Amino acid sequence: MAFIADISTGNVNAIYELGVRHALCPNTTIIMSESGGRLHFDLNHISTFQYAHLGDDIGSRESVRARRALEELIKAALESGETDSPVYTYLPGLQRPLMNGERYQQMLEETEFAQEKLSEFLHKGEEAHRNGQHADAVKAYESAAGMKVNDSFIIQRLAIATYKAQSPSALDALIRARVIIDALDPEASNDPETLGIAGAIRKRLWIETEDRAQLDAAIRYYQRGFEIRRDYYNGENLATCLDLRARIQSDPAEEQFDQMSAKKVRQSLVELLTGLIDDPSFGDRSDQKWIYATLSQCSFALGENENGERYAQLFRAENPADWEVRTFAQTKALLERTPTS
Image 1 (cartoon, rainbow, N blue to C red):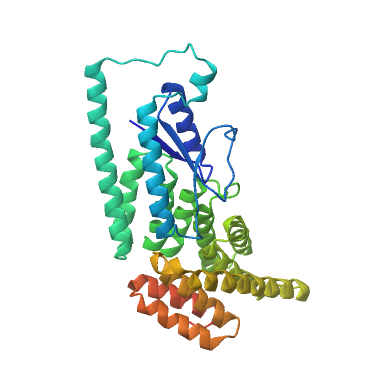
Image 2 (image 1 turned 180 degrees about the vertical axis):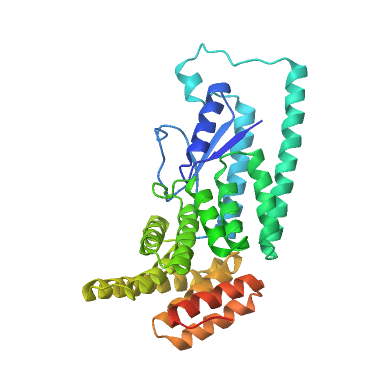
């Protein structure tokens, strides 16, 4: 059986699990990573399969190429039997741990059953999230988190569902969500997803409490998320938070700096996203509606209202869910200082 570890985000749990695999098995371990990222820990000497990450999505063409190449790599690893674990490479006399067949079969069946239950909880969570049933999504992700502790993806999804559920109140939900996402240490994280979620929670906490520290933290998270991989979700929210902070600055120079910084970020986003739209593979992307939404918000903020409305229509044409439409309207209203219904 081949084992595949994607270390693109440098998640410490994934690195630890990779180390356990290398200690227990001399071969059929495949490491993969985003080509634009850096290798974490001392992994530069280990052969790594790389793929191209195109912004917030992996394009269809790259997905097909990477899948075929990965299939060939798995087949070769299974057939060759060559040692790929650095543990067994540097300790060639080391013997792999053994387990009797009956116990192995029992553990295999238990693992398969647990994996099926975990997949069921994750599926329920994603379906509830898509339908805007965030309280149900929280229950599903909590069940998944109980089965797989400290999993980054589950923690991220649980944090999102928790603050969107707004139960028992919006503020209480945000405080709970902040505790959840803080388990991934956003202050030190280089994962744009973790940073984006942490930024969203802090931004909403500032809206609820007007605590300046929450807004400053949101800007810090969004800025790092944008700088790491030009992630447009982080970029748009960074610009929004900079504008919001400019409005409460007591120093005119600081106010002007935040305003100009927000403008520069939006100009960079427009250049980045229009380039994605012009790319022949744009039609294969799964995040088209969010690219349109981001371009719309940026265009309106830059005073390009005609483009803003054009991209807003393209966003609506993608049939977004009700909660997605509300999110779009709330962001626009936040910048316009007008209430949303």
